[in-house]
Image 1 (cartoon, rainbow, N blue to C red):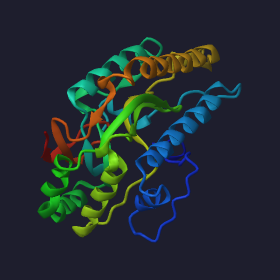
Image 2 (cartoon, rainbow, N blue to C red; image 1 turned 60 degrees about the vertical axis):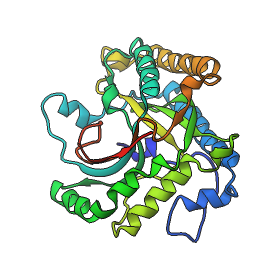
Image 3 (cartoon, rainbow, N blue to C red; image 1 turned 180 degrees about the vertical axis):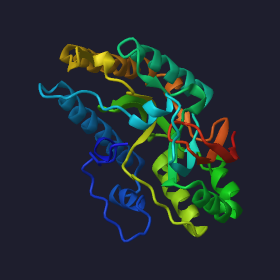
Image 4 (tube, rainbow, N blue to C red; image 1 turned 120 degrees about the vertical axis):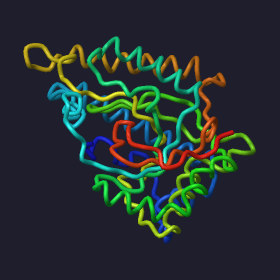
Length: 296
């Protein structure tokens, strides 16, 4: 994926720390206050959406960015990028919500690739990426004594996520959440979970090589694999692009007004299943589970 679309921190929060764990800095900057952590995540996604909206609506916008690897896979190609991760799997209620969002997106972008419901995931920690199968197998063996403890950790550390909305750029769309605050048990946030999984992997002797640690809790829900929905005669149709942005904002307004106040938009990480320790060519939700943590 294009790093400049996905991995810049738009929160503006200074997070320098003496810790070797990159997640510690934000916790220290926020005085370990869940409401401050939530505000940083909110600022990141709001600022990012505003920047991407301006890019898409600019008169010189050159068109959506095609995920070339995914397009090739749909034509029988092969993905060489083997990865190792710990995923948070959305519970049934959240999957159903996302499927509804995807249906609405398809009304304006019918040729967009949609993440299958069974493949939906939020990356709690990307251990490494773009390696060979042999290299990943070696790391799986190294992590093996600790894998169950890591994947099961959400059984007793139940971070809560709330307020889903669509985050977007010229390449892909995601549904992003915020770490919750306000309840007594919200002191342990999703950001704390990311920090702890990082610590546990490092303690197992495996170096974490994540592409990003930005304050984002998101699940990719769709990617562009063709420009045809937003072009006419090979040229960008700016009206269609504007309609895409309008549709996204309409869905976000519905989520805020109808879903945020209800229990349907709340996700306690670890519900139904714990973390999914997964390896392989899993960029688009595939791969193979090494160990699936116990849920509650």
